[in-house]
Length: 282
Image (cartoon, rainbow, N blue to C red; front, side):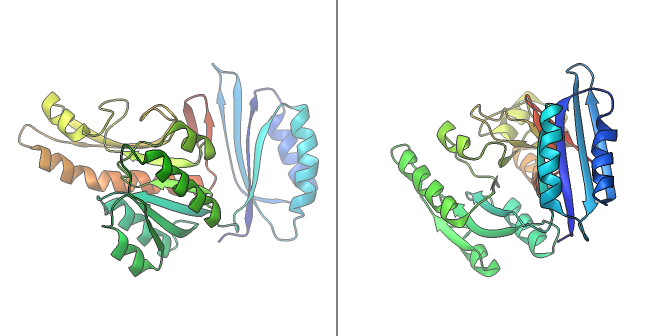
């Protein structure tokens, strides 16, 4: 884990914002290692991400003083230490390719987190969880037991101290009550280039529509199905020769890469949401 801190800011745009932040960091002796910013001129909003080394830096004192400055500038802000590894729960059903990819990347050090639990409504992923030494929770879901299942899921997530939920081809719709417990902290991968072909069978819909490109999308989950702020997307070309099975096969690699990038950017505190959009910093 990197011994750095990250400050994320969004606020009404005005002159001098960069100078104000940089001056305060300079006064505390910060060695800035990366900085990026964005202005949405139509919305009149300013966004910024700053990362700096923590060697000899008083993060608590800086946070207290920055809070006063932020209030005067109407800033929404987040301050994170990159050495604090978020705790991630992965939800999965029977398609395991995204789960395999996430577990491998986390073990290889590409994802800055711990994965203490895998939750599934099927048992297919249990041997994989056992291989990686991750607790596996089999919580069946049916139309009649959905509420009780979600209550059990939330209880176990709270007990595990989960910071982020990743839906790695979890083929169940989460209730608005569940989503409210993790605002902008549930990431889903949808096997379509949203907003096209929402719902459960997008490859079949794409095949019947005769499209020439298929895609995959990672987004934050909201109460509206497949309508949350988009984090990352990718596409691959197909042709009239491809059948549904070919679309599914070609889509799997996209699903894995799109989801892993979105999760990595969230863990590295590179994403800010506003409205139904995201800013993803370099």
